[in-house]
Amino acid sequence: MERHILVVFPHPDDEAFGVSGTLALHAEEGTPITYACLTLGEMGRNMGTPPFANRETLPLIRKKELEDACQAIGIRDLRLLGFRDKTIEFEDEDMLADHIGAIISETNPSLIITFYPGYSVHPDHDACGAAVIRALERLPLEKRPPVHCIAFAKNCEQELGQPDIVRDVSAVIDKKIAAIQAHRSQTEGLMKAAAKRGQDALEWLKTERFWTYKWNH
Image 1 (cartoon, helix red, strand yellow):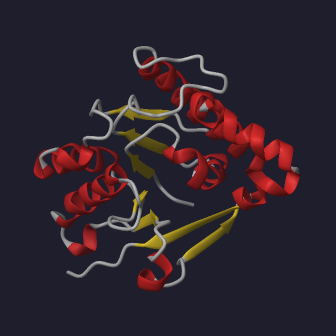
Image 2 (cartoon, rainbow, N blue to C red; image 1 turned 60 degrees about the vertical axis):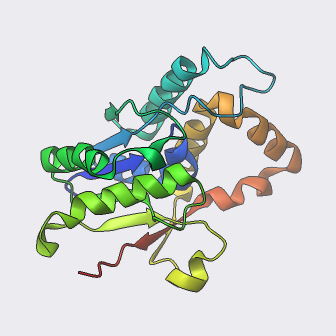
């Protein structure tokens, strides 16, 4: 059992597909979870299926969706850091690391979950993961908690090797699906399409994969 888990992602719904099962399992064990979400995903392309949001209303809608997803998972400490969507790569690197470092110092996590920098496709994903690593590099090696990273770039297994952790989350798949469905503006079309393809279309959700970040120094 972990003492405290810190999750750092840039967008609402980043937690839903890749880690919500893992987090739900930890939450059931009573592990406190802090989720630091950098933006409200206000530049997201999806507006619902059929559309029910617009560019003005989307941030508030996505904020409520994120709160509902956290409730489904069992996350009680949600931090909204207020950065602008699709600009994380342009933020001052030290300032971003300062913000994340302050949360690390406050929560003293035994495990951090984020994106693997350079292997997470979206510039915001990579910049977020890099900021977490930068914040931790300010600590002595022996005081850095393990960092479990999500990676899904096409070359991630060739360059990083096989994932260090492959977790079956079937026991909490109902909570994971509830978290995904909570992000209705972004996921409703996908879930409707999956339902048409049959139950097997969602089998991949039952497994979550992580790479442990390897420190060079």
